[in-house]
Amino acid sequence: MSAKIPPSKNPRIVIIGAGFAGLRLAKKLANKAFQVVVIDRNNFHQFQPLFYQVATAGLAPSAIAFPLRKALQHAPNVHFRMASVENISLDDKTIQTDIGPITYDQLVIAVGADTNYFNNKEIEANAYPMKSVQESLTLRNRILECLETAMVTEDEQEQEANMHIVVVGGGPTGTEVSGALSEMKRYVLPSDYPELDFSKMRIFLIEASGQLLNGMSPKSSAEAQEFLTEMGVEVKLNTLVESYDGKTVKTKDGTAIETKTLIWAAGVKGNRLAGIPDEYYIANSRIKVNAFNQLIEYPEVFALGDIALLQEEKVFERGHPQVAQVAIQQADNLAKNLLSGFKNPKPFHYSDLGSMATVGRSKAVVDLPGFHFKGFFAWVFWLFVHLMAILGVKNKFFIFIDWLWYYLSFDQSLRLVIRQKPKN
Ligand SMILES: Cc1cc2nc3c(=O)[nH]c(=O)nc-3n(C[C@H](O)[C@H](O)[C@H](O)COP(=O)(O)OP(=O)(O)OC[C@H]3O[C@@H](n4cnc5c(N)ncnc54)[C@H](O)[C@@H]3O)c2cc1C
Image 1 (cartoon, rainbow, N blue to C red):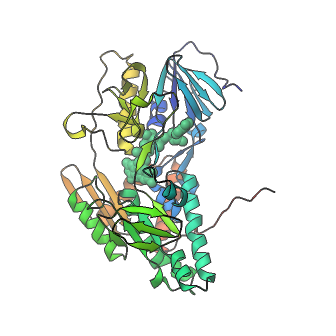
Image 2: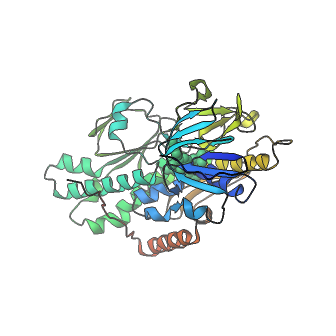
Image 3: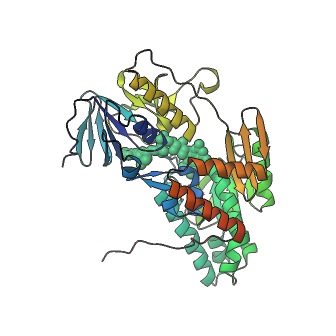
């Protein structure tokens, strides 16, 4: 097979990964004097911050995914190939993919990160992650299937295990999904399953450190915890999950919780690519780069976003947070340097625009530079920022309608278990 990239007189930049960083860079290089080849194993861009709403039946997967070919229309110098990268030969400037080899003049690695189970194979085999649209849908199916099982189970202990949900990891993902589950329990599920007693459904949020939302201000952490506790989520701080066999979560302090659904949101690690020497990967498989996002010995190779570890003096000595803004700003900086032919290249400096998390209706926390707020206005601000960040006018519109409908009716309409039809 061949990737069939047409010949071009312009230098070829290959971008692996069309997430926040890769897609942004491709758009910045559209209609410029480069041949740009974008490779992604999916043919769509995913808006990860709203995965939890897909998992909790609030949004349709198509609302938070956007076809890459559409995103890259009107850019004849940009060629998209749906492919998985299998190996990179840095010395030959060639990538091996499942659709054949592709050579490059410059290479941008923007493959993002995946769930980190910290080498615990048992948890990896039994827990439910949320790092892709597909995984979010699998989790939605799981939650709904467990409730269906709870409906028909005679054994009370088994019924409760099907209703309990344990979320591990008190970062924005764990906090937001716990809040959304608690709202489902309160507003939505009792009408769907009138024969079930939802006082038996317990939602646990387990965090190894002493606070939720570690990257945010202590105020936001404390307020988010207060919101969740008010909403009935059982928050357990300073608690390390040691094992989960698909039935029982065991923590280091000896607690055991019976559950059929463990959501693992406890960490990420870079998506490693074969061919990149091991010594380039440090700290949770992130690739060490210099201030221009270049690999030290290969200045024609760049890493951006979650996969990159760029150590900026003082505040970001240990690298930047793995968030969308870092990926976007690194792509913008690299685009400028590439377009200037790397004449007087600008080093990357992260401008922290703030962070936020929502816990439920009218409940959110926002940290802006020098300013913190919470509650209804923080929640509206969160809705607005996320709506603006979503790709595509149609997606924005449908998400707005879904949110408005849920706000007014206290009901989501996507509680469908959609399984693949097994082949004979
Ligand atoms: C559930 C969740 C919630 C989040 N919430 C927030 C939030 O509220 N705010 C925030 O700022 N950040 C949030 N983040 C983090 C944010 O999404 C990431 O920081 C951001 O996506 C990083 O962008 P990226 O371009 O580096 O990687 P990604 O956006 O992950 O893109 C990587 C791309 O590479 C492709 N790829 C990977 N490996 C290969 C391969 N071998 N071959 C071909 N293609 C490959 C993938 O398909 C993907 O399209 C959240 C993340 C998750 C998982």
